Image (cartoon, rainbow, N blue to C red):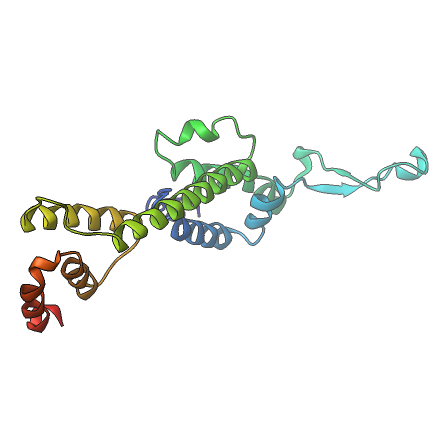
Length: 201
């Protein structure tokens, strides 16, 4: 079973740039392996329990259920108890060398998942903040004094690349109109002519 899944999670490399997609795919993979795998992620490793046959003799405060000795596990119980190891292995294999140190001291899959969620959600907030600033700059984009049209277009292209990196894709029409609106009044007649051309419809 693990060999079959090995090929699948090789493609699930943790990516801050595509954090939401990674989160959904990883959750789907973990849940597909075993129906209790998500319990391991949300509540921690599974402890196999058994009835305490000595509870009556131990008095009123005795635990009714106690951890079952590992040497008494059934095959199914061994599988359940090992789910945390499987989940940790999958999560470890999704991380590159720069991220692994962040989770090295985590004791179980639940702690690893929590760290990765915090990383991803913090990055998403940072990305949203950067995108807000970038979109404000986009709205204010204009040709600079003494700037040639080619320099302006080059600056605009770099700016569009930054927006793409932040997950914002603009249509060609939006880009073209922004260039036209960013030109000074001395370009008014040329702007009218360009707006009438097919390239700017």
